[in-house]
Each structure stands twice: as C-alpha cells, then as structure tokens.
Length: 71
Image (cartoon, rainbow, N blue to C red; front, side, top):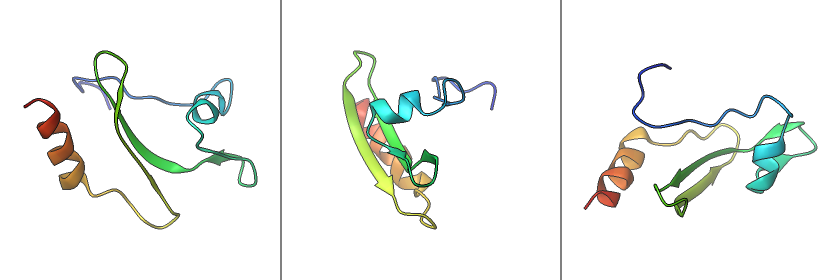
C-alpha cells in the first residue's frame, strides 16, 4: 500500500508485540483482533474501535473521524 500519507502498523516480527501493547492480541487465535486506532502527531490515541470477526470497519466513518481531527 505504497503512497499513503501516513504510516501503517504491521505486526510481523516479533509476532504480536505491537498488538499486545495495544491490548489487541488474541492468544487463542494466535493473531490480533481487528481494530482501527488513530494516533495523532503527538502520539495521543484519538480514536480506537475493535471489531468482532466478520465485521469490517466502515471506511466512510473512519474518513469522517480523521477529517474531524483536522478541524
């Protein structure tokens, strides 16, 4: 996903370290729970939502949240 104007987080190595830090690691599945976390330039979490399996984040709602942060 090159060309995005913001960084994204992948949790490849060491496996689960970042998602554990955010309380999203699912030990039973050996993978993280799906979540959207928006962190501002100062490192403050401005939005956080976790999703149950089978439920996807609404990209339009996420866009609106990010747009509101710039106001």
